[in-house]
Length: 424
Image (tube, rainbow, N blue to C red; front, side):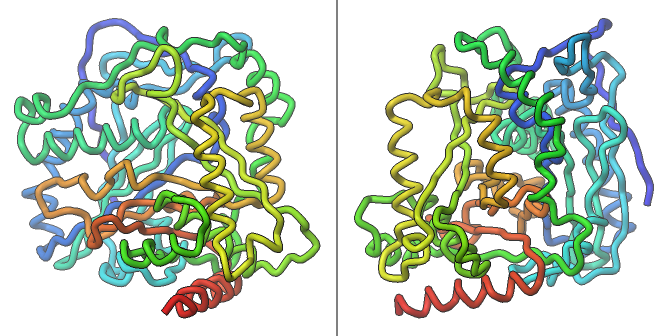
């Protein structure tokens, strides 16, 4: 295993990007970790000698636009975090070789979480992004990324990854003409409700990230990660079990939530909860462009009676989620003062939440080796989330990832399959 730095050059001075109240919500979340798997049926020597140099070079070129990702996150006087960066900053890139089974790791099967940990880099000190490239000789490669959630959301992350892959595939000039640069003007984010001050006070009250630990399965014995695929036809059948015109994401999330509640068999709870985020760029005033760099997500909370969520005749869970989604039409900032407190409340209950979105298009991150064979969000092990991506092979479908202790996963799989069999 070797580590390198991919530097960038951008001016002579130190620059500061202030964090907004949107960033504060996620400041103490565990870093977001994804692994992209690509088929690459060549030797490690071939990859390291022919592909890795250009991969590093294209990363450096990409960082000339996304230079805050090479900076560090610092706390100023008074405790407000800032993203600080200057010319010569860099992102650490690690190259490693694995003897693990590439095809099994990149499958949908339940796989031990420990097998993913070695594919991902750790953030050092105040870093906000680190990258690891792992070769599986004569089988494939993986690109693992670890990014501080306080720096950006999934839209910012995939914007960066799509830019990097385009630069590597097409060259700097062609790629930069195809992909918009990041929009870095934080002054466009208005805080008429005084949320920054409120969130800073609440984060101090909740003692940073300590209250999020009940979600965290890292270090627990025998935790596995599995992927559940919802094809378009299956989703259409599921929609018939609802009384509303639910979106495919609501259907998939509702079904996963229902199966988890059944699998846990905790009948002491009358009410159960589900949380998700919603994109706010186009929903706030003034609206932010799609290429805005940073976090711009609102927290959405769903509550329903346990007896209804586990109902096998109707997908009440999906209906409850869809009702909250439709409620966003009244204004995405309604109840924003409760966003941080609701995050900690849901963590204390180990409520299921959502990471990622089919809209992000992670299977479009194509470096020239074909589209990814598989994309996994590994950090859901620490956030109690179900991960959502578009289906790689089934247009209109959804892939849902879940990390659970093996015994709980076995119960979940049983509930998942039983529900599907009832529809046949």
